[in-house]
Image (cartoon, rainbow, N blue to C red; front, side, top):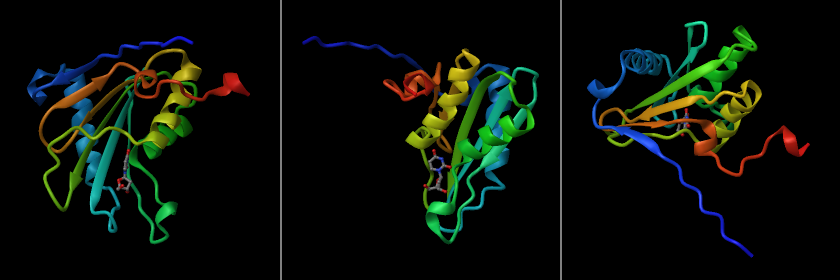
Length: 160
Ligand code: THU
């Protein structure tokens, strides 16, 4: 028997002004994407913006449905939008932000497990890490250096 110790580091920015210009711009695109979220049931609006290697930014937002499980998260809409329009293009980073109708979300909102798994698929394929920036409406911003850091012991095609 043995124990494995892993160490993962995340960067925490105290405010928007600490970010690099490119990352500010990407988070601003995610904020813009929040505006077109369709969330009449949760009242929780999520926006995601993806920067591709070719400089193009592709966005997505959550789209809910009266049949609740038929809705979809912003991150998966964004990544599938990117992959469907620009297949086999390296994904550099994704920025995620939210706006709730119920309260001011003041802590960083990390992507859900299913979105992590979906994003990881593309990171594994491209063999290059995807940076993930996530934040609430206000407060600190977290940067994960890769999807692997957000989903250790993950499932991928190597098991198949
Ligand atoms: N949501 C996302 O868009 N991304 C996540 O990672 C977590 C949750 C959406 C789904 C649903 O429309 C609303 O937020 C409340 O769960």
